[in-house]
Amino acid sequence: MEDRNEEENISEVQDVEMSRTEKEEFVIDLDGVEDYEVLDRSDKKIKFGNLYKDQKTIVIFIRNFLCFMYREYVEDLVKINEDDLKESGVKLILIGCADTKFLDAYIKDTKLKFPIYVDPERKLYKMIGLLDKPRKTVMCRESKHVKSGKVVGLMKMVWKTMTSGYQELQGDMEQQGGAFILGPGNDVHFYHIDLVSNDHCPINDLMEKCGLPFINFPNDKRPENI
Image (cartoon, rainbow, N blue to C red; front, side, top):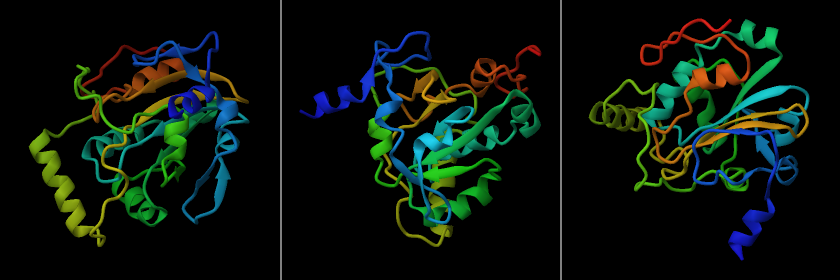
């Protein structure tokens, strides 16, 4: 019954580009998720569809706020030039799976300058097709945006937990993330479903899909495209 309900939120759509995913025969049907409400920093409810209905929008679903791999990914997202986004008519937003009380510290720590919303119950994560646990048997390419080794990264995670003022998890530890390019309206241009924690969609791939200039990351140097 659960599989049938999930399939009702997914339909086949033509002309959609996909990154590697275990569900390549499906793409997201935004009619099933546009009315779902996420929360902003002030706990105000906002319909998910209102975040991308007016313009093309890069939507990044991140893992728990303590995940060092996604923290380093977000730190690279911050390097995207806001003026380039405006000139191209593209918006960038993030969706997290933690409580709103953790948002201010996360924004400060990562120097995040783009809007971020949360879905603490992870219903949107499920509805849009993201994995609720890693596919540990799948071999994935290493993220171009993780700079720390596993040992150092885990130490950072433990230290952040100890110094955060909250002795609790900041989002489900198993929930995986993903990247989408949506809008305007219910157009789905591209999506990438993370299979494991470091299976990030390269940021320069998103730049290319949106006609934005490449960023010269240490692990992802590409020739100028604009």
